[in-house]
Amino acid sequence: NAGVIQTPRHKVTGKGQEATLWCEPISGHSAVFWYRQTIVQGLEFLTYFRNQAPIDDSGMPKERFSAQMPNQSHSTLKIQSTQPQDSAVYLCASSLQENTEVFFGKGTRLTVV
Amino acid sequence: TQTVSQSDAHVTVFEGDSVELRCNYSYGGSIYLSWYIQHHGHGLQFLLKYYSGNPVVQGVNGFEAEFSKSDSSFHLRKASVHWSDSAVYFCAVTGTNTGKLTFGDGTVLTVKP
Image (cartoon, rainbow over all chains, first blue to last red; front, side, top):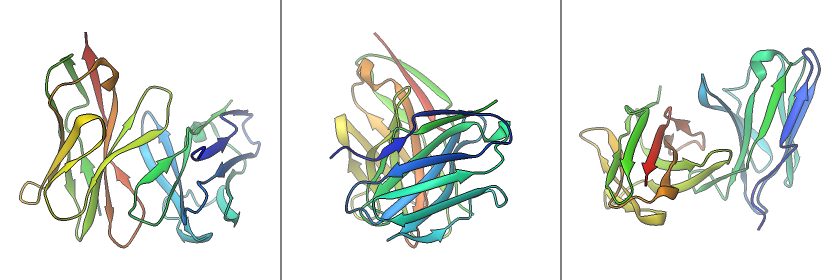
């Protein structure tokens, strides 16, 4: 079990460019989550899926962020027209079901220059 | 609205000391409470969780936490810390009808030799 895999580990984009972050949850886990971590805001919930269906995207900035889960083995978080304030560590996590132990990936550090 | 408060941003102890990291929460409804640890440069790792039953729950590496409904608290304790326990500790709450975790700001634990 390799755990939750996130790629790339580091990404640098220019302001205005698009960034796509990838996540491979643990096999068999039905719930997949995205969080963002910054020094200023701490850990912020973005969105989550259950059995690939979007359940709660209340934390997603509405205009430029989108998340998809096209199959049970991967999820993507896409940020269009990246801005410096999007710089953060984006964490993907999965759990067998909601409210069971959540396993986090190592994160993708996004830097927008 | 659910909130989690970790009143101590930094705690410093010596190896072998006991430690208590404080967590208070506000949530209207049934909840799960959990603690996570994040070593520098790594993702979050689950330590323990409480939902119901015995208010003292045991976690990995000798950690335990005690739930108090009257105090709205879920403090984390360890009887004898090791230098490798130096990390950031996050308390989190989630409602029983959602998988979304709301985190506190974290407590940086430094264990001196």
